[in-house]
Length: 253
Image 1: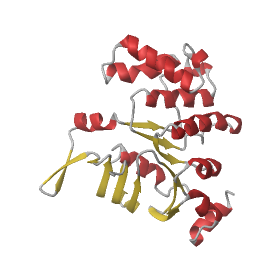
Image 2: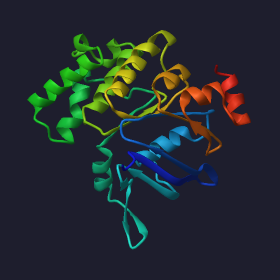
Image 3: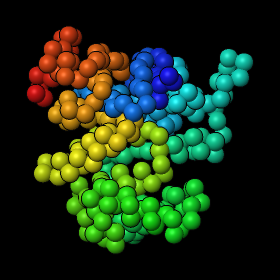
Image 4: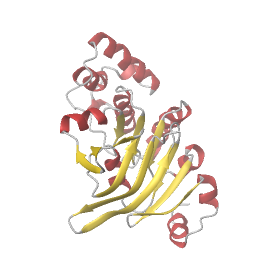
């Protein structure tokens, strides 16, 4: 079976700074992988490379068997035209730390924007789908509310619904609860748990170890641009093998 995500010795530099130093991992369709590690370890950069928001400097990234951001001819990689890269990116939903909602559009309008503009979906169908998604994230009654009228947790749930509106085959979450007040974290994690239960393939950068233990199929600990340790979340959290992992987890658990 083709992995949904396959990273093969992925490297990413920002000038002289080497942020990713040969990251290799795989995620099968329907699985949840949680990436954990200290700030600056390369987790968010790796996530951005998966949907080609950042270009890799070496190695290869595949989503559902296709090289991300490039075509291959004669053993050489050629960067895709921006339009082709954008088309490829349609199948990958991404939810950021900060919600990035259009402040002048209602929750429902935020959700239907991309399906109408990018996929040319009929507005009536887009509205139906948007309302269904608001119901899915528990915000049916907030369709006409503007972002400023919503709590942080509600805004993040709208952002998740917006990403789902494009019917992605893969969802990326970059610390989706880190900007939230502690009492609002649970409502976002509940939506993510429901998505996982529904079979959505997810890569989640998080510090929520309870979520990783309960929901993830694979836990990956990164530090200084490399994968230090990976495995079954419950086993890794209970009995980490690497000293660096032990030190990191001792400050969280």
